[in-house]
Image 1 (cartoon, helix red, strand yellow):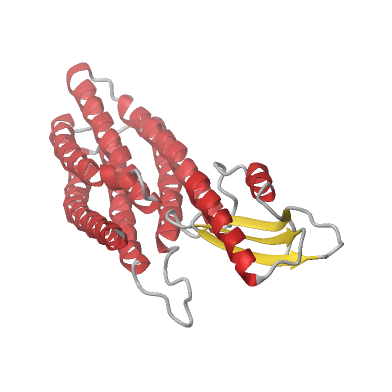
Image 2 (cartoon, one colour):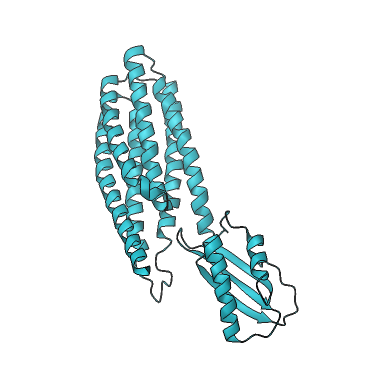
Length: 304
């Protein structure tokens, strides 16, 4: 059963990497076409979409490399291997989303002050191509994004770029048929603000993992109480709970006993603790330091 799980997990990783590679090739082509078209048409919205698409390509490459690194084996000098590579990729990609958004805001304000003529027909056709390409990438990455922060960061880049391309299409149509030229920088601002929102959320979540913060879904006080209710357990203290990545949640703590138990008895308690933490809270790595007869104060959380 364990072999089947590992095989399935590896298959999913390979499938995700293949989809990332397809998205990289596809979006590189879209970016090149949009840059050329944006310069010819004079559309800031199209150029901003191209810039966003270029950041997507970079983010996809980062996600792809991180996915490869995450599967490298641990070593003497890297005892955790590269298991945090994908979290780092998510953090970097979220940062680029926000940086791109800020640049777009400055460009949009400049274009409001200095409007330029736009070839709306070219904008419409290029945005349709971008919508098709980005939409296909979204479908490729959608499934993997549900369970992996790195893939989620790549998916968000693709999804927001698809929305941006739709906005560019709407702008092109409004300019062509109603001569509403101010819609181009306005849509650029809307795209930028949306990028800030989704980028900040992903940046915050990946930052929490990198900083070893306790996952918000885990009720530390309740976990401690449950373990302290196990037979012969007096106190659980010096608790640390963190995520190594999205698949591994670790807990380490000192556990104080009422009696001076032997190693066999401790192993029984340890098994009970592991069962509670795994089944109820999906904590899959547990390290406990047994203690007996220590009289000093024992707070649940201790700053090391």
